[in-house]
Image 1 (cartoon, rainbow, N blue to C red):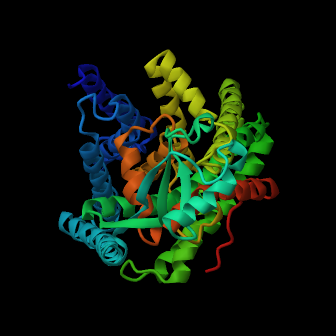
Image 2 (cartoon, rainbow, N blue to C red):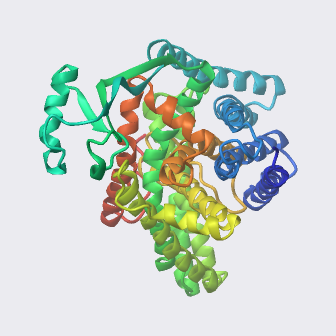
Amino acid sequence: MVNVFLIIIAVVIPALVVLASLYLIAYFQHPDDKNVAYFPKVIVILGLTLAATSILMLPLDVANDGGRGGFPMDILWIIIYIAVAVFAIVICPFAMFFYESEEADPGAGSQIAGAFKGTFAILFAFTALTVVLYVFFGVAEIPTIVVLGRFQVLSYPFMSDISNITYALPEIASIIGGNNEQIRFDPGNPALLGDGSEYVEYRLDKEFLQFRISIALFIITMVAFFGWLLFIVFGGIGLVALPFDMIGDFKNRPQRIPYDKYLERKKKIGERATELVEIGKTIQSRTSGGIMSKRDRKNYNRFRQAIFLLEEDYERLKISYKRQGGKVIFYYAQFFGGFIALGVSLGWLLHIIIYMITTPEPFHPFLNSLVIALNNAWGFLGVIVYGLLSFYLLFCVVKGNFKFGLRLFFLFPIHPMRVGNTMMNAFLFNVGLILITSVSITHFCTMAFSQFTSTTAINSLFETAVKNLKILKWFWVVYIFGVFVMAVLTAIFLFIKPKDKPAKIRV
């Protein structure tokens, strides 16, 4: 029977996400993108809606109660994740290439051609890798136990006293054959041994049931795999960097300065700007036909990082003098928000230690107990807490990516999100990142709240097929450790080098 309340929720939540995405664009977009770039904006709204929906489908799956709510969640998960893959691999890159080629050549034809070339390269690489891995490793190996016989125990060769059970078992095993068989009692009541209420099962060692999964599910597995790689790195960094920078920004907040100090700092910033202009001209002169060498690419990324930090320093200077230090209440709010973020990050790391790493016999359910208790008190409270905890991980991924780009700028250019000063290519880059990692975050939350999600379709999908694929199944054993280790390494690194500094550009 279809649950009408679940249908209403399934319609209302995506509508709210669309409205939130519209506000996000209006709040962060650069003035140059106002009333233009409608195609990238539509992609950003749809991408954010899709990512949020994929995460919030987990509590919907829980409320569906194993199919009793009337939703075919197994089919819906496949549809949502295929859509995520298409957006992350095809649509977002196409929109990003299309937007970035506008400044290079304003001709519409050249824009579309350039966007198709870049998108085709990404799609071809992903398709080739997926096909090769599917042919060789697209087989799930489900562990099973073969039961050859089940015997009712009427009497034991030895005394039926419970203290002699361990001595009786070897002889029973020799009677029914074999030396390495595993024997267990079912259902098990030591007080009734030998009266016919006990059974002995004769089992072989563990065997594996093999079957080839569908190509659609394997595509989802590939997206989840790449999402996990990004989540391990960026999520682990962000869990530490997000609260660290929020508290650090309060400590280093702009202070009121006199006019002479303002002129002195403005002069130094002007000298840095002049130097960067010359460096930019040199990098541009070395670029022929839009193709950069490896060295020039690194220098360009360093140049982008230096420009960002220069703009940050100039904005802080303006706040210090022209706004007399800015709104103090904002920095105090950020300071207290940093401590809240620190508490959430510590909660996640503690949950990884005492529940996720110690599974299948966890030391303590921790966050499971919180979500289940709130869900029993009032269903929406559990969903709200789950949503806050899972979306916090998304914020950590975005923050970790930005922090990674600032410190390891030689790998890729940064795409910062700044209020009133964010270009659409930065929006598209971060939306693509959010889409890919939304799959891994949902998987992570499925395991983190396994007591809450035990009857869900997504739990069956991940635990039965995805986690038992050949070769790839060994990756799932270590990725939880990866998030924790990356967070610890980031904490050590940020305490040693807490400040982001401009890179030296060698041209």
